[in-house]
Length: 317
Ligand SMILES: [Mn+2]
Image (cartoon, rainbow, N blue to C red; front, side):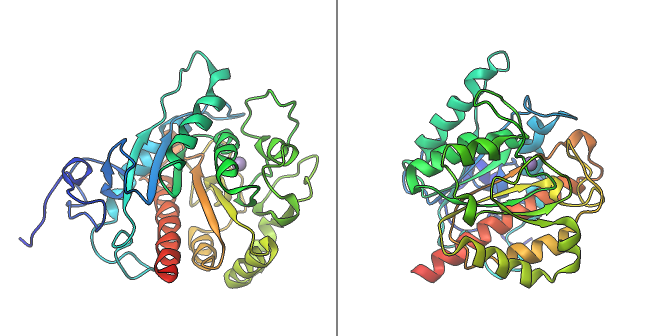
């Protein structure tokens, strides 16, 4: 047997280089990154937020981080397709574990998330968060904007998330309303991809509807996203319900008529020129999943986010 070792999630001696755990065994962190709360020397931190109390329909996204981590075990130490190399070679990356939230005190949730994200971002350069429902993106944006200034939002989603918000609601369908009103995101430089529902307003954000995603080439959509953000620093949020329910049944508010995972991954692959400062994958709810379809899609989207970042770091060095 070639040199394999196991349980890199707690035995890894270095924060770089791919793990060699067998795909069917070993302790499960995201892509076997070392589990640690120590952020010294960390470039990229992966963090779970097991929160789903803001869902409007089917709950269960609180189990998203666990499911995505488990599904990420399929990424072994071979070069990761389509990036062609070890993503961690020059990008010290850890799994920071999960955010602790009190299920009986939901009004504390936004501040708890914002404070811990701020703490992570004070030491790590980049945070990739695994949700959780889409409400979590609002406190995450607050922490990222404190570090980077207002951001362009690139949102893959079946829903605009621009519903009514009085500044107090804890609602996964209104984080965009609040982010625009609070000046966290530059609406004119923001874009939503895969929308298949109507909301009362667009908040000035450009939309690419689901049927347009179907008609357009992936490379044209990638170019449109890059052009629209105009070189601004951006936050990338990926609601797994952007995908058609055939490719992501395990989610709280599925909408038919969405793109395939192949189409969306091709769009993501083309975002190398987008200046992504932070990202999340939300709304994976494994109780409605079959054969890990949704969890694998979510893990792959998260892996692409790491791949894009690794490429940008390589280009900058
Ligand atoms: Mn959403």
